[in-house]
Amino acid sequence: MVTHDSYAASFCDRVIVLKDGSIYQEVTRAGSRRAFMDTLLDILRSLGGGNDDIE
Image (cartoon, rainbow, N blue to C red; front, top):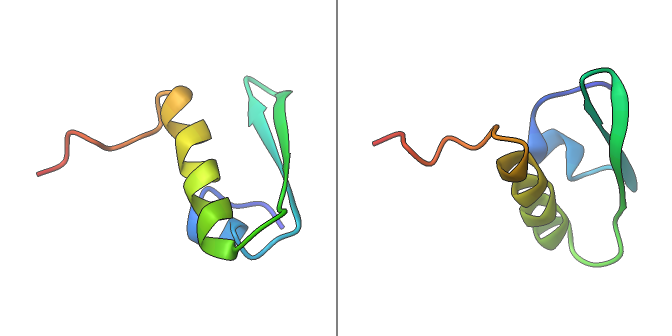
């Protein structure tokens, strides 16, 4: 599956994050789905993909 949705990706066992067409990071789910989604969101924020400015 290919997605930009961290909620959908949180149901996977493994996520490969791409940046500029190259593998940036590989993350494997070890705990709860919610904790995995939070990890994915943190990675997206580090890439500049977070929407913390939305009011």
